[in-house]
Structures are given as structure tokens and as C-alpha cells.
Amino acid sequence: MRAFPDQLSRRTIFIILGLVVLSGAAGVSLASKASRSPAPPPGPTAVTVAPVLERAVTEWDEFSGRIQAVERVEIRPRVAGTIDAILFREGQLVRAGDPLFRIDPRPYEAERARARAALDGALARRELARTELARAHRLIDEHAIAQREFDQSQDALNEAEANVEAQQAALQSAELNLQYTAITAPVAGRISRAEITLGNLVGAGAAAPLLTTVVSVSPVYVAFDMDEQTFLRYSALGAAGNSGVARISVAAGLTGEEGYPHEGRIQSIDNQLDTASGTIRVRAILDNPMGALTPGEFARVRVGRSPSQARLLIDDRAVGTDQDKKFVMVLGPDNKVSYRNVTLGPVVDGLRIVRSGLQKDERIVVDGLQRVRPNDVVAPAATSMGRAVPEQRPLIAARS
Image (cartoon, rainbow, N blue to C red; front, top):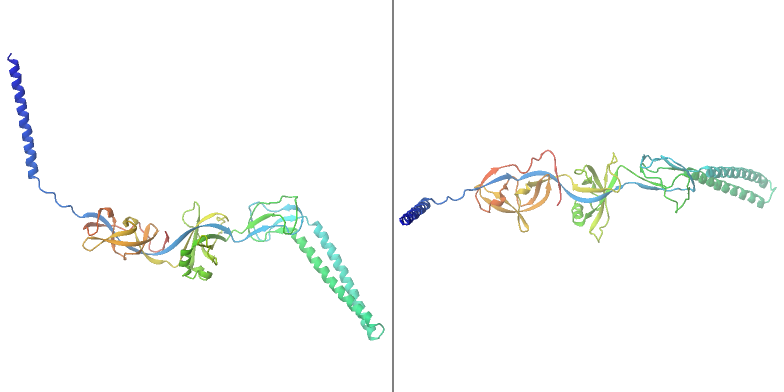
């Protein structure tokens, strides 16, 4: 009967000790809170700043176009006959005057021989008519023949001379037809495949079949459409009427090529805009000495004007967006930043052109723009504006 009171006493003691420990811990916590000092105010926000750069920049407008041959000729027969020789390999480069096809020349050689014989006969008859007229002159002076006979001799000579001219023309035509049996390349370039194979009979005239085509290789055209706003900008430079196109630079690149390795110039701008699309047709000319550009290929084209002009450049990281506006934070002399609206242009070599809102060498926040507000005091650390840009060469920019 004694165990129960002893156990009760132990439990009571444990409970009392627990309450004492809890009350002591609470007292210590309250004492520590009471002794803690207020938190200090936050310091200036750390940001990196860089000066606004000024560089010589050539601005470019970008278009999509197609490569075209300067000269493209469809080879068709000018005389009828049988193809008895094909003298080229498909796809090879040919020079002007190189033989391509030969039509059986034998019928035309015979025609030339006939025309030459007919001319010889006409020449003989003309000599006889001249002799007869000379005789008639002597007889008419002696009053041995009538005037009518003299006039007949004169008419016979005139007819003989006309016949000689006709036979000369016939011989010339026969010789031309014989020359046309040897079909040669009219221009230098790359030839297509033979559309008519050996042994086929071909006709002449408007319905003559296509034998092959030849396209020139160098130079080549690149044709593209320019929008009206861009056209008006270049018109101010004298491009209207093609009077100032020589001052407009052009470069092109094929699909898969890096950049725009093929340089050229504007050759012509069309005389009217397409009212449906609001664009005008432009044709530039590019050198193609290695034949890398093939007519029909898609080309990326950029057009700019020279010389380059000084432009302000900043890093895109320094630009913030406020609804439809672009802004930067400009660092003042007291390390206080101010809000500044800017008008931006295209990207050039990793930097953004600034058209208005900044001045050269003004320092702007590059990193940490999201952590500052207008009139905040910051702790600036200097950095460079974007990656290093060589100053000895003009930069190039594509208009956005």
C-alpha cells in the first residue's frame, strides 16, 4: 500500500521540475528579445555601370531575294534537220562561240552549191547584157537600129543586174543556213542538259523545240522586293531614277552561309511600286568568280548606304521595358540613378544603337537594373559596354 503514494510523489516532482525548466527558458527568450538592438537600414545597391559608346556604323536593311542569271539564253534550232552531233557535257562551263550541236549540213551544202551556180549564171547573163548594150550604143549613133531596140538592150542589162543581186542574196541565205547547222554558245556560262538527243529531227521557226539553255555565271543578279518606307529613305539619297544607286552597298549570303560574304551594288530599282504588296522591285549585281551562286537560289540580302555614320551604342542588358517604352538608368555624379526614356535602333555587333535619349560617355546601369528604382543611391562598379569592338573598322547593323 506504500508503493502508490511514493509513485505519486515522484510524478509530482517531475512535473514541477518540467514547469520550472519551461518557465526559465521563456524568461531567457524574453530577455534576449528585449536586449536585441533594431536592424540597421540597407546599404546602397551594388550595380555595374558602363559609359555609352560612340562608333562609326553602317546600318543595313535586310531582305529575302533570289539569285538570277544576268544572261539566260534558250538554244533553239534556226534551220530544220537531223541532230547528228552533241558537242558538250551537261552542266559544263562553255565560252561564247563554243560548238554545242550540229545539224546534218549536207542538204544545206547542196543548197549553197545550187545558189552559187545560179549566181554564176546570172553574172554571165549580165556580162552578155552589157556587151549587147555597148553594141547598141554604137549602132544607135550610126542610126543603124531603132530606138526601141536600144531601149530593149538597156532593159535587158537592168534585168540582168537585178537577177545578179537576187542570186547573191540567195547564196548569202544558203550560206547562213549552212552556218546555222553548227549551233554554238551565244554567251559564256553554264549549260544545261540536252533536251533533244542524237538522231532526232528538229524543225525551225516559232515552234522550234528547245535544245538546251545557257546561263551566265559571273556576275549574277540578286532580285528582291523593298518596302515603300525603306524605298523612300533611299530615295532621299538619290536612288529614285537609279541616279544614286552606286552609293548603296549590298551584300548577300546563301542559306547555310555565315554572314553575308558576297558583296555587290544596286544595279536598278524599278519605276513603280506594286500597289498590292506596297513594295518595289530591286535588282543588285554580285561578282561570282568561283560560281558559288547559282541562279534560282534563295539569298539573304542586306542593303546599306555608305559612308558609315557615328552612332551611340549600349548593351541590351542595360535596357528596361515600361509597357511600350524603353528606358535606361543613368548614373549621376552623386551615385543616384535617374530614369531616362530612349529610342532604340538595330543591333550592331552585339550592341544596340540608341537613336535618342542618351549622350556619349554617359554612364548607365548595365547589371542590376531590376534591383534599382529612380533616385536610388547605388554602389557602382565600372565595366565595359558589351564585348570589345575594334575601333579601326566601321560596324554594320541590320535594321530591326
